[in-house]
Length: 250
Image (cartoon, rainbow, N blue to C red; front, side, top):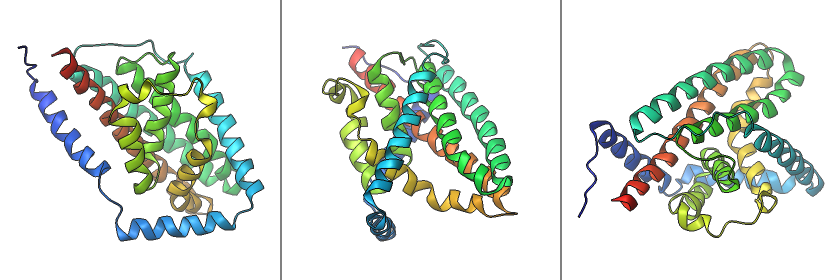
C-alpha cells in the first residue's frame, strides 16, 4: 500500500489546518449568541423592502464581479508543491492587503459618501483575491462549481459562528460530495443569507469608518484585517482539498 509522506512544510501546514478546523467547529460562545441575537432583532425592525433592495444590490454587484473576475484571473497554476503554491498565494494576500489598506484610507478620509463607496469596492477586492488564490491552488475558476466554492469560502470568512459551523460542515468539510448536489446555476445561491451575514459581520468595524477625522485610520486598519481574515480562511479551505486529494491518490 502506498503511504503519502508529507514534507516538513506540509506537516506544519497540516497542524495549522487542524487548529483552524477546531476553531471552525467551536460552538458559539454566550457573547456570540448575544451579539447574533441583537443583530437578528435589529434586522427584524428593518422593512422587508429594504432587505430586498440590499439583497438585490449585493447579489447583482457580486455576480458582476464573480462573472467578470474569471476573465482577469491568472491561468490555473497547478503544482505538486504545497509550499510553492502557498508562497504565491501569500504574496497575493499581501498585495491585496496593501491595496485594500490604501482604498480604506482614501474612502475613510472622504467622509460618508466615499465611506459608503468602500463597501462594493472592498467586496470586489475580496472576490478577486479569492479567484487568484483558487487559481494558484490549481482550481479551474471557469467551472461554476469552483466559483460557488469561492462564495462559500467568502461566506465562511464573514459570518456568525453559528452560521460558520453550518457552512463548514455542510459545504466545505466534504466538498467533493456536496459538489455533486450543487444547483444547476448560481441564481439558486442563498443571496439573502449571504448579504445579511456579511453585513452583520462587518457593521461595527466599517461604520466607524464613516466618522470624520478617524475614518481614514479606521478604514485602513479594518480593510487590512478583513483581507487577512479572508486570506487565512481561503488558505485553510484549499489546504483541506489538497490533503483530501493526497489521501485519495494514496
